[in-house]
Length: 316
Length: 251
Image 1 (cartoon, chains in turn cyan, blue):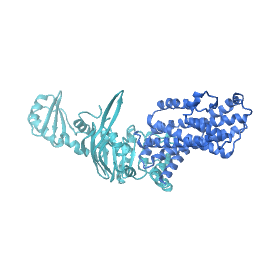
Image 2 (cartoon, one colour):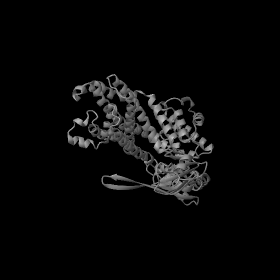
Image 3 (cartoon, rainbow over the protein chains, first blue to last red):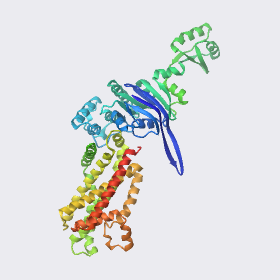
Image 4 (spheres, one colour):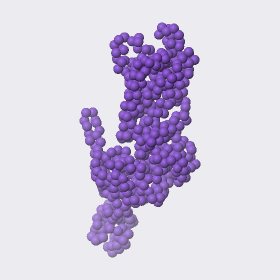
């Protein structure tokens, strides 16, 4: 549904007399399949938004190729516009207009007739549970309602692909969960959803596949499960008063790929945590090592992010 | 056809929003009405003319051109608010014509300017101003061209600078000399030769002369067609430039 190869964009910024060229996007390859929720992750300044704005025809790429819903981005941006929807991060509604007015206008800008535009607005308002507020001015809406109107505006023309730029940023947990349901509903209706996010838990819960971007390039792609499996298997933490002997026993075990000692126990990197736990218990028991507690950690996308970019998303 | 449809979509949306708060039209009228009531009475003795009607024939056209210039130049502020709200970006991802994004807005400004001009003209009738309807309509055409040009310029600059803080001083800096060099408040016939020489290079001075000729009833004066032609050309240039910015602007 979306295929990009070597997409590039640089900006020139002026500081006094010196011109500085910032390579915001340095060759991005993406493959998004039809009907999936695709997550695009990366720290601020990674080039996510620039990539998204190029795909949405808002800025022209410097180089590379991209095909979106069968239309060529560089040679036929007009056709791309007809086939995609785009929901910006900062909102898109006018305070003094009502949701219904905005929706009807938006549909008509896509060439839909007046009567059809009205019917679509009714349908979409219903779908996003906005009917009750449809004729109130947008300035009276809550953050969550306003965000739903934004998304409704992005899909009123029934695009094949919809781009959502950080759709849950700034929403309270309940509105966020609600938004996830809306996004899943769009996918279930057959739309391909391309979503950028800061939240790894969101990418994990919502996305079928993700790409992680850092410093203008894609550093990892795959399903959340694949990416997590790729890094290092599972982590088992064993607490014990006799750290040295526990380390000696477990360090020589074949199922442990790596061991770290800590003040009150050891961290074990193993292939399959669930299978390793009985083996660990048996080995410690056989060597009469006293055992405190035992915990299994599955790697999170946070760990993936840390391995791929060298830093945690939270600190960036 | 698509262009006309798009223009009418943008125009009707903008008009609907304007009419929702018609108080802004009244606010825009406040200053010119004050000039009409509090400044114009000084003109009969100052200009040395015999009747009020003659003084108003000279003053009202200038006042209307002033209204068209200033009304247009400050429209950019509304656009910056729309940029900030994301409305422009939302329009730019649709296949809507970029020229329509500009013209729909500029035409709204032009229509509201003409509405204000009609009100001022009616008020001036109470002060014995008399003007032929045909001439008046041509004068309104001149005003419409001015307003189309100045609002397009203002939108273009707004898209380029993207901030009210930059737009306000910029527009004031442009408007000030334009105002003083166009003989809007007092005709430049009273000006020394060097000042008239500079004013000849100010296109708005031609527009003011043309509008005054129309209010005088002097349809045949070369000022009329020259003023209209210059304003039409500049309006086309301004619209073309600003529409390009609508197509290109990054944010």
